[in-house]
Image (cartoon, rainbow, N blue to C red; front, side, top):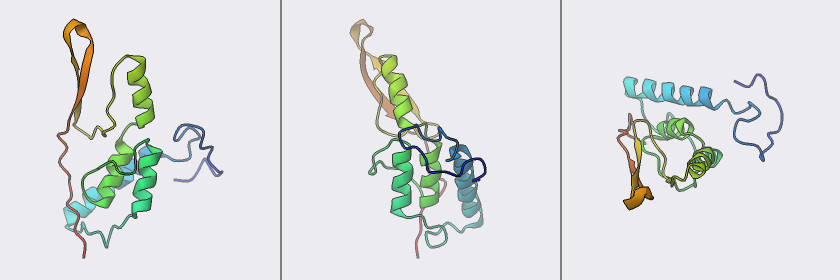
Length: 140
């Protein structure tokens, strides 16, 4: 995981611009871990504990507020946060095209609709979430 980058990251650059975060690999590993825990019936926070600080760090890294809600157990939350497109890039792309962008995450399977008002002007955006958590957090 750490091969290819062994330096202090330049925080003025976009996430993973230097190739050190390996977000796609991290996302995949948290997804596999979530699936494995669910399949084995071992989804317990005392087995797979991630701190609030780590989840907050992942949220900030992806451009979300620390209070942004992600469903599921802590490891599933980590997967979902890392699976999100970087929020700043989505906002910039939407702004360049005159489309309002939500601050809510667009979870897998979700949909973001932009409703046009009279005259074709953008009226509002609507987030439709269809994602069902694979896990339910259970602590001991």
